[in-house]
Length: 375
Ligand code: COA
Image (cartoon, rainbow, N blue to C red; front, side, top):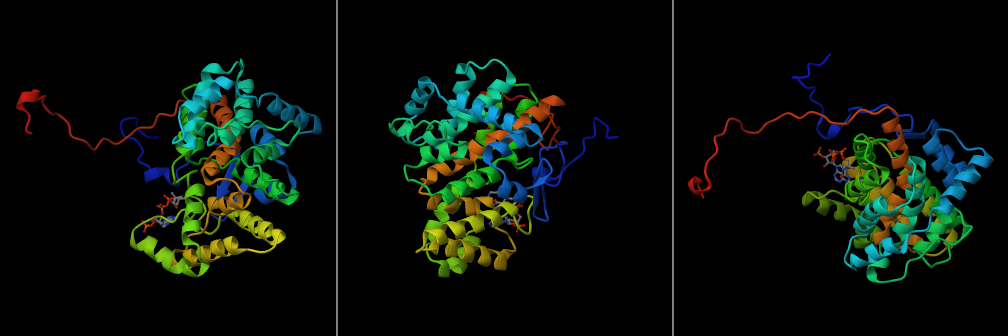
C-alpha cells in the first residue's frame, strides 16, 4: 500500500499508466481495437453508425425496437435554438470552428430544456453534428444548415457539410469513418471528460472541456494539419525530402505516431482502403492516394512510425468535397458519443479524479515589499 505522504510517481504524460477500469473500448499496441468486445473491423464492416453509437453507449447491440427509438430520439433533438446560432454568428468570421462549437455547447448548458441526464446526453449527441456542420459557415454570416428529415445520422451530417451529392459508396465510407472516430478509450479528450464528470459537473460542461482538449494538433486537430501538409507536399516523389526537412527542423509530422499503436493503427488501415476505393470508383486521378502511400512508406523507412487514423480520414473528407476547417468538428460530432459513454461510466462508480504532484519549486521564502525588489 502507498503511503499518502509518499505518492506513487508515474510516467510523464501518464504513458503506460492505467487510471480507470473501462468496459467501453480497448486499443492495443499490436494494432487491435475493440468496442464493447467487438473487433473494430467487424463493426466497421457490418454495423451502421446509430447501431455503433448505441453499442458504445449501452454495452450491447440494439434490438430493432431499441435502434428505432434511439434513432428517433436523436432526430427529435437535432433542432438547435436560433439563440445558439446567434451566439455562434457573433463570434465572427475569424473564430476557430472548435471554439465556435465549444462556445455553443457552453451556451446549450444554460439554454437546453432537457431535465434528466439521459435527455441531456442525447440532446448533446444530436446537436453536436448540427453545431459541427455550422461551425464554419454561421460565424461567416451564412445561414445555418439543418438536417434533412428522414435521413440516416451520418447522411444528414454529410448533406449539411457539403452541397455536393455523394454516391452511395461515398456515404457509406463517411459513415464508417464516423464509426471509427466514435470511441477510443482514454485518449486525451475522453480522459478530460472523465475528469470533469468526476466533479459531478453536467454533461455540457464535460463536453466543452472535451472539445477544448480535442482542438490541439497532437489530438483532434491533427486531421486538418495532416491535410494541409499533404497539399503542401503535392508530389509523391518528394515525400522523402519533405520528411527530411521536417526532421531537420525538429517538426512533428502530422498524422503519424500514436501513444498506443506502435506498428499500425487499425483504423488507419481501414481508412486507407476506403480512400483507395473512393478514388478508384471515381476513376481518373489517384494522386491523393499515391501521396499518402509514399509519405507513409517513407516515414516507416525513416523512423518506423506508423500513420494514424487522422492521416487517412483527412484525404477522405477532402475527396468528399468537405472544407478543411470542418475536419476536427466532424471528429467531435462522432466522438461526443464516446465522451458520453465515458461520462456515464465515470459517474456510475465515481471517485473525484484528483491526482497528487511532486513539488519541485522553492520553499521557505520571505516576503519582500515591492519597493525593495531587485529590478
Ligand atoms: N513526427 C515525428 N516524430 C515523431 C512523431 C511524428 N508525428 N510522433 C512521434 N515521433 C517521435 C518523437 O519525436 C519521439 O522521438 P524521440 O524519442 O527521439 O524524442 C518518439 O517518436 C516518441 O514520440 P512521443 O511524442 O514521445 O510519443 P507519444 O506517445 O508521446 O506521442 C503523439 C504520440 C500522437 C502525440 C505523437 O506521435 C505526435 O505528436 N504525432 C503527431 C500528431 C498526430 O498525428 N496526432 C494524432 C494522434 S491520433
